[in-house]
Amino acid sequence: MQNFHLFIIFILFAISTMYAQTDSLLFNKSKNVVGEIKNLKLGVITVETDFSDDDFKIEWKKVKGVFSDRIYIITLSDGERVTGKINSDPSDKTKVKIITRDSEEINATLEEVVNIKPLDSGFWDQLSASIDLGYTFTKANNVKQFTLRSNLGYLTEHWNADFSLDAVRNSQDGVESTQRTDTKFGYSYFIGKNWFLTISANFLQNDEQKLKLRSTPKVGIGNFLVQTNYVYLSLSAGAAWNNETYTDPAIENRSTAEAYLGTEYNMFDFGDLSLLTNLFAYKSLDNTSRFRTDFKLDITYDLPYDFYVKFGYTLNYDSEPVEGASQSDYVLQTTFGWEL
Image (cartoon, rainbow, N blue to C red; front, top):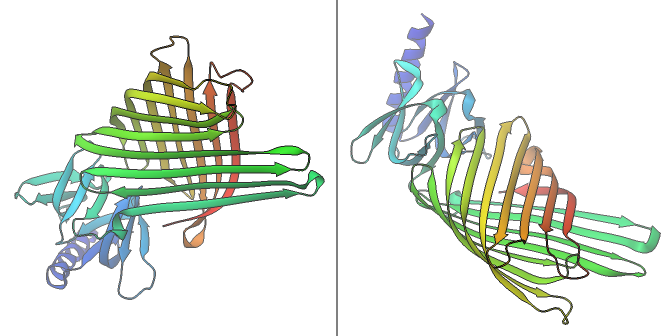
């Protein structure tokens, strides 16, 4: 009898979707939300409704059925990206049918669907952003520290672009002020199941390593080794060109070709906690003994209204720094932020 009731609910949702041109989600066996699906990403689906000023955000693992007559860009866990309609199979609540614009039918489970984005979504729907700030003041020696971590991203059917800016400013009486600025630009173009081409550039200014500016443009190819509603894991490799100028004018500038290997791990939908970390290793092709690494770790705890607190750790290592500079420099940051 319970299965029969569930079947009737599926049919009613499908009919209402057909005539009202709205999207329906069934979750927790008997509860449902009717509105407009804005996106599914990082294990959470967002639905806009007429009866609430705030969007509903539901963990995808709690969704038992989805019905819509709209066209979406849908990503599956095996890396396949398709454009079409998505509706649950009334005879098996764990499965969905995706009908592409070429009338091809693709069958998948709800768990295999890792990203949904409306094809007609606007600029703001494809944009993601976050900014978090921290400030420390100590009366002794008038110690002041200001920290900033920020990210900006834009995702489409075929490509993704991102930008990040991290900064630290330190000052205290009797000691020269120090600063550190780390800026990154990135562009990825999806070329097939789980594969992507990547073009990026890193810019680092770091007083601890006497870097007036280190600029590192690079090109490569990458693959999503794991892509689920809980975890993303990617691996990339390619070539880079490292250019360095120094705060001491007596030190000669350096430029060198490098090969790089990078990995990124993104863990989310674990309660209010999420973790993002990446590691890039660079091997000089001109100087066979020089080796560099850039490491970053962010642990975020979500708060209401899209606010959060974050613990961040960044490490830069150079096996052959210039004379008088440190081999490594690290930053620990505890910040408060907001995300779009």
